[in-house]
Length: 174
Ligand code: SF4
Image 1 (cartoon, rainbow, N blue to C red):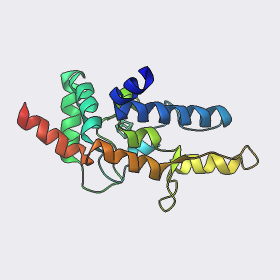
Image 2 (image 1 turned 120 degrees about the vertical axis):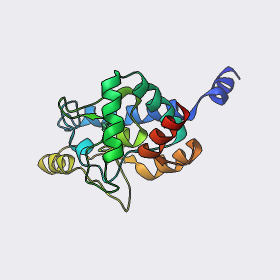
Image 3 (image 1 turned 180 degrees about the vertical axis):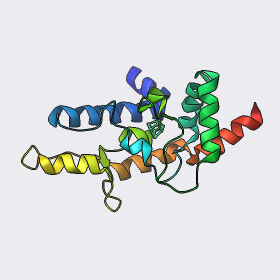
Image 4 (image 1 turned 180 degrees about the horizontal axis):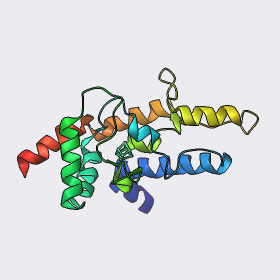
């Protein structure tokens, strides 16, 4: 009963985070050569479009952006405004000098799953991961995360909206 009460109070985003963290950890443990780690920002530098996120995800991204020093936040806003509709483009939230996400703990779900989850028709897009796997072809089989299942569960979190739109909304309500 107690655990049922806890589950009914549980918020879907932290549960998704925990499940994705567990899948990522299991992949890394089974395949120590996996290239996704601090210092590799290839995916953040070659987005097909600006980050897209649901309202729940935006809530924590917004809080993390508001906690940045003013100059850094202004840089994110400016780069978002100037970003083209289609990529490849560098994420405005990326600290390009450090090659690190400025809001890593609050990053959207798509950033958490990239490189570790696949979809039947979309496949895997990270060339660095693909190359590493090819170089370790005799290694243990890979247990990929199910990207379609994540998309399905994201429906509970609301309609995904572009970072540009969220920031415009924030500016209007400031
Ligand atoms: S939000 Fe962070 S992790 Fe996601 S693409 Fe941008 S810089 Fe990379």
